[in-house]
Image 1 (cartoon, rainbow over the protein chains, first blue to last red):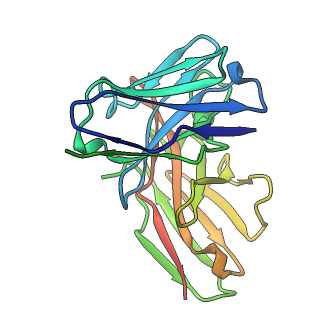
Image 2: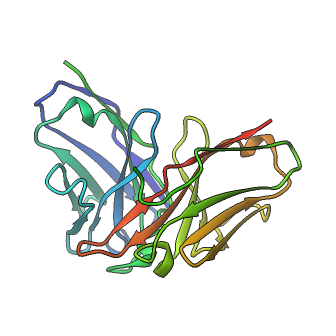
Image 3: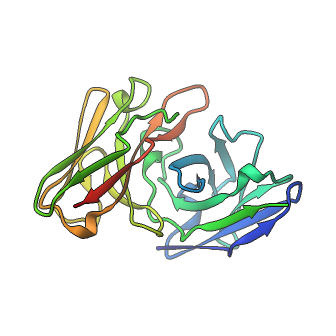
Length: 123
Length: 111
């Protein structure tokens, strides 16, 4: 089971961005994929999840409306995108496989994780 | 401010036992499972403990988890230098939207 994320990005404020997370070694459509943010020198923040089987998505209230999470089940790839980046979006973004359950407790299980994608937003 | 509360730092000497606490509420830890993650410097987090007290594959039995009420703990016995890392607790948070919440993280220093 492996998740491989796209490479580091340097963007200007106001630009759009889509980063990816390619899965292999398991049934991609059966497990949620989560995205987690880690700002410089800070802790982990759960952003939201996508269920590749039917593209169902759930967002943390903190990130609802700020990002879009999606998946391409034929390409075994999940995505995280921004329409207009801000300097405060500078962070490492991780994807991680979550559970098969549609709701609740087991969605806290994140294993394995991708290697992370560093996004730097600066003018 | 994180929904789950952890001490910012902990320390111990090689061979010692240390515990890291994680405090929440009935909306998260009180009614849901707790997960623990280890993040070594410069690397992605790794699942250490799932479902409160189950060790993930390959995790040494020096690591153990427990939960009581709205709090949880991670214990590390026989401390080793390679245990120096950040440790995060996580749990599902019951609400209208439902989402996962993390603790702020504890930096473990092995002196």
